[in-house]
Structures are given as structure tokens and as C-alpha cells.
Length: 292
Image (cartoon, rainbow, N blue to C red; front, side):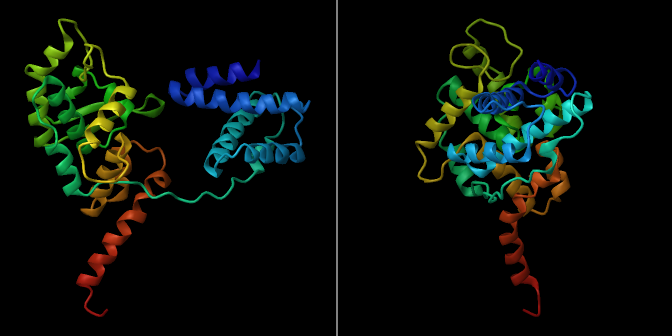
């Protein structure tokens, strides 16, 4: 079937991540379920039928951002059909996305970040691991899935760099500073071996059960750490990625460099952080411009 071939194409040819492919598969399943119920041929779908599908998605209570994602999936799928000479035109190419309100990223101030780090007691091997997790999230801006996939061989302590495998299996180099190096050394000299419980692993971060940490494990760790904090902010691993980017831009980093460090394919994705940093820019302007 065309859908199966398309998903294989995303995996083998475009090297999309497993998570992204699952998202595409779910969107296409929803689409074909609608087509089947309404006896619509996906190769001959009309603009009116596309509008009916969009109304159906809206009736499910989906946000505009989710509807836009569905449309993006279908554009890619129909582009594939065009490239394979299965159809002549991509009807979804002319369908505009619903307007999406830009949600400003949640981030921590430097004082809030320091409070989070200092709240970790360092009484157990897991405490040393957790401290390093937060240090590396903030130092590198990496995604939680990227952090879980860090292997010992990916780390160059002398250069203070880590090789990261990002979305679409694209590799990039991220950097870390002296603070992260201190806790990396502390973690590697004892606590990590204790967590391994005699087992071997190529991965940096080990769970309390002696296995490589999974994304869900890190999210639970973050939840437990934040329960000790006074801040009312909802803080997730992604919050620390936002914090990394915002602090860099506020300190004067150019947005193109931040894009590279975050591993964003498009500068538009990084652009959301400029909404946060504009307040900082205005503050500097009002302090420094002589003719207000």
C-alpha cells in the first residue's frame, strides 16, 4: 500500500526518527479512517472533501497547531505520490494552515536555575546523576531524547564537547563548561558504576535499575526535583532547553549560532525566542539610548 511505502521512504531515505514516523502514521490513520467512513478515494479527493476533513478535525477539538501538523503530514504524503507518478497534483499544496498563535517558551531565570541545581543534595549515586542531567541540559540545550542517547564515546572531555544525534539522525556537536565537567567527572568516578550494579552499558546515564535511562525516566526525575522548588512554573526537560536558548540570546549570542546549537533545521523555529529576548533588548535600549 502507498502509505506503507511512504513510511518506509521516511525511514530509509529521509532518516526520520522513529517518533516522527509514528506521528505521521497516526495522522494518516486518522485521515484514512475519515475517507473510509465517507467513501472517498484518496487518489481522487476534491477540495470540498478536503474542507470536510478539516471540519472533521476541528470537530474533534484539535488545536490549530495539531490541524496544521495533520496538513503537513498530508502534504508530504501527496508530494510522495506525485514524485512516484501515482497522481499528477498535490491538492494539499494549496491548502493553507489555520492561524496558529505563537506560544512563548517557558524558561527559568538564572537564579531559579541555580536554586534547582542547589536543591539536589548529592547524598546518593542517583543524586550525582540528576545533578549532571540538569547541568548538561542547561549547558548544551539538548533535547531529552538526545540526552538519553549520549554514549561515553560521544564525550570529549578535553575539548568539552559531546556528539549528539538529533532529529532525522543528524549529528551535531554541542559544548559544555567547567561546571558540567566537574559533575561529569564526579558521576563517572563512582556513582555511575554503583547505578550499573555490575552490568555494562555504553550509555552515559543509568537508571536506578542499572539500565540506560529512558525519556520517561528523565521526565519523572524532573517532576520529583521540581516538587522541592518554590517556583510555580511548570518545568520540564524542554523548559531547560528553552532556558539555554533564552539566556544565550539575552547575553548577546546571534540567533543563527543558537539555531545551530539547538539543532533546528529552520531559523523560523528558533525565531520564537526573539519574542522573549525583545523585552531584554528594550531594557538595554532604554538604559543606553541618549535621546529617549
